[in-house]
Image 1 (cartoon, rainbow, N blue to C red):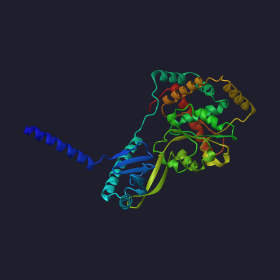
Image 2 (cartoon, helix red, strand yellow):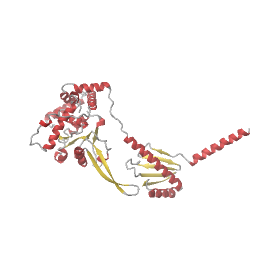
Image 3 (cartoon, rainbow, N blue to C red):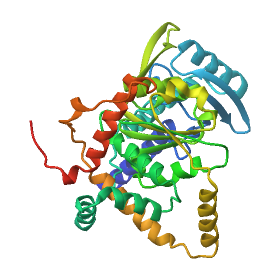
Image 4 (cartoon, rainbow, N blue to C red):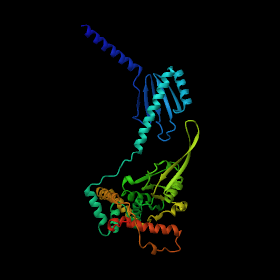
Length: 403
């Protein structure tokens, strides 16, 4: 009986100690469900991180906090790595919310630790290279190779681009498609579509780019000049960059010109560390990239234009008739959208199996361009590069040689 009583007393005391321990160390959680509104609970405080935290710049942690205790709350913006600012917030919490400084200090220290861990986890997710490419089945690979190895490849490509929804523009559409294909090469080509407003520049670019895999292209409506430097270092490599309207993208013309020519852009910015000291950081974005854009003002883009192929949209009455006939047939339901989608997917599969092989033209030294062409040095380079782009597209019909 004595042993049983002593054992029951021991269990009761153990439960009391566990309960007391839980009360002294309340559970501290960080809810990251909403990245723009992180919520941290440390009884009796609830701290919301308004607007989330920036992932870049690990030497600082700027945050806007809403600290709440029951029905009272305060808001404060600070760098959690700055001791002076943190101490000032601790005193403010103690005075206005009537919370002990030790509780406020413990909460902010634990919140900082959890935000550090959260930020590093998010950065790790971003740096992990996720293969978003479609995994082709053996049947899809076989069908793509059959298309690329069959005779009259260029003629079939021109016709099938039309069947995929591009009306008219017989030469422009195949030229644009080949230039988009060159994105996989070390020296990709670029293209600018010129024409009056509402004539179909964006439509042509949109329809031809629909034949390129989604993971290989970046569509931009508006982009500030500084934003261009904040892509990942290799995020744009061998990508097709589509700019809907160059007339509204003056700020990015310089970085675009540099990444075309130098295959990279760099920018040095000044930041402050936790001690308030300034230091410089170099941002670098690597290419090569293939750039396509549309504009109504050719004269404003000479520096970019002479680095690109210029195409003029067909503004003839015949083209007007072809487009309106298509619009009427589409409205009448006579356009097979499913067939157009399947054809576009076949083009994407063909693009996926093209390998980044090197092209050598044994006849290059025999080729000459007229002396009167505009900027002959750059034009000659484009001339050679376009021949290589065509050969690159024909790679499954060429004998592969190894050096």
